[in-house]
Each structure stands twice: as structure tokens, then as C-alpha cells.
Image (cartoon, rainbow over all chains, first blue to last red; front, top):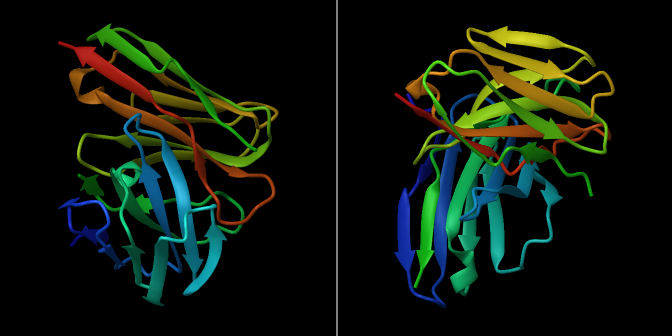
Length: 115
Length: 112
């Protein structure tokens, strides 16, 4: 039973295409995230949703649009893909620890390659 | 901007050696976490430290949170090849909220 699952694992596409990455968590968490990990392994937060509401949007281009149909799902749609979008995208979820630090549970990542 | 700086960026050691990885910031964090990431996988949480000066042990791993809650360290005793991986520190800023930021990571390679 995978706690946070994202698909696809690998995504190879041409510049200008539109693509989506799906994420689902079965942990009952109320907060979900998208992180981007670049070639130097630096993890940067992109978006966060809490109870289906967008709470963090870290100056990500408008071409990236997250959608949360319910608390267990957070999808990421990317329009007009660019070379610089190539990276590993991680979905994560967490539960509210009441100020004692968010404990993130990550999916296994989607490696996006834009050619 | 609240940044977490990790050092060293890369560490290659022999099996049985001890090592320490550092995570520093000029900002105060309500908590710091340490994650370990293996190739092709997402980061996995190892520990969370919350109280200034707190020390937590996980088998051969010892984690410490600085008294001022601006820094943390990870010490591994008698490293084994299975410890090889990318170690990431992460922090929840003192302002609260749901934003966890990550350091750039320390890539550890333990040779048999």
C-alpha cells in the first residue's frame, strides 16, 4: 500500500506540449504539496493545498496549475513546456502537528524531461 | 528569505568512520527535520527536533538542535555502506504555517 503515489514515474515530452502529473495519498492527511528538485538535488516548494484550498504559491509561472479535486488528490498540469521545466517533481502530504513541524511524506517522484 | 545551509555538500568516507553533517541558518525555526533520500525515491523523514538543545538518537544516528533553534547537526557513528544517500535538513519557519524549506543536501558515500 503506497502512502503517496504519483504518476507517471517518467515523462518525456517535446517543448510546447501540455502534460499532467497526478498524485494521490491514502494517509488521511489534509495538506498536500508539489516540490521541484533540480539537477543539483535542491528541493523547492511550488504549491501547497490545505483541505483543497491553495495556501502556498511560490512564484511559479502561470503555466503551472495545480488542482485538488479532494483532500486525497493533488494534480499538477503544465502548459507550454519549456526546457527549463526538466526536473524531478515530488508530491508530498502532511498532517498538522500543531506547530511541532510538518512531517512530510513524499511520493517517489516524476522525472520530467523536456526535449 | 530563510535559508538553510548544509555542509559539507559531499562526503566520501570509509566504512567504520564517524561523520557529522551541519545545517545552519540565520533564522529561527520552530522545528528542524532530517530526511534521507535514495536514488529514484522521495525523501524519507528520519527525525524532527523541536526544542532548543534537543538531542535525539536513532540507532547510530544522533541529531541535535541548536540552543537558539537556528542550526542542527547529524552525527553518524561507525558509518556503513547502507548509510549512503542524500541527507536533507528541512525547517518550518518560526512564523508557522505549512511551508517547509529544504537545505541543498549532503551527499554521503560510504565505501566498504
